[in-house]
Length: 454
Image 1 (cartoon, rainbow, N blue to C red):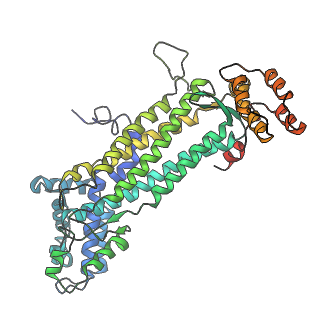
Image 2: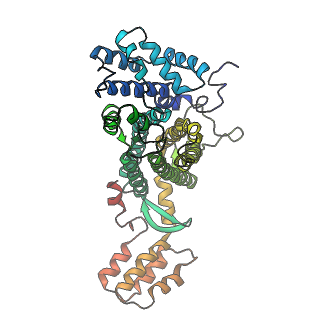
Image 3: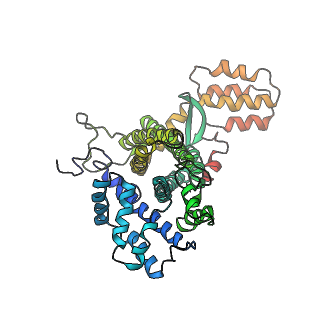
């Protein structure tokens, strides 16, 4: 069957191909091969600068040619490596042989070709490549999350003063504002974005079991840890992992994925709340010409974007949680279970991107229904019981909570009922007047101020 978005097995490359296209640059097989070539090239150049008697420093022209293999890396390059892999059945060795083939006609570089992959185990190349991929992928992820956070904060500011009946346990509760509820999500998400950004991405280049054994037996006089650190930090731009087995232990990956899961969980919480507010009529959704809400009920305008976001956040979190829990575990100095799992980095990020896109579309359709918000507030005068009994406590009125409980619990309360109760209270006149002026729509505390601080 010919491949197309309609025949793709995964919706990432099928139905949602457009939403995930940006991630191919970082997480595709092509991107992985390109990263491996970069690591091999920078390692070779660093070796040539390390003063090894048998390897002269590569000229600037030679270095430019090697780095050009990375800059010009294209689909033809990928196909060349994959053709070699048909024989080697080993993708890292195929990269090594491909680079050797590229330099075969250059006298200077051909003479240095046996130092390509010198002292390296496959995971030296792979773990450093994953570090490069995740560095770029994290930038894209954070950029998207910050776009989402900005939209949430925009609504926090826009609706900072719009009163809304809060609900605890699904029941009427002390009023808030629409903006304050969005602010809660903006602040929570902002913290997790900072946590994602703060994680130190690590890489190692230290040989078969992490001890530089082969390096030292060949050149005991060289400070191999310093050479490795220079390549990782100065050439690849990530942080140096000092201790490992054959594989980098992937703890930083677990931290990165866990932080992303926390950010996603906050957005999933937002999806469900907004879905519920739409159900209550607090929001309307902008209509899209030609769109259908139901195959049988023409009137429906469904909150499909929030539902799509919720579903894909669930898939993303399931994958990222598995990555975080599996990758730091390896039998003895290594087993191969991490290799196949690591090929799904882009899948986890892909479902994040689908979810973020759906959420942004959903947020963009929201229209506030202030009349419905006001109607609910005006039917919930019992929420002022908290305010009244708290003022009663201040002035020593006996059993204030119990009095308000008897007056309001499970009952429909009118403004007149509360007014008569307040008038009969033995409290100072100014306090009584404050309570008499209070309405559900004005009992907001610092909600507007807190909303504007998002």
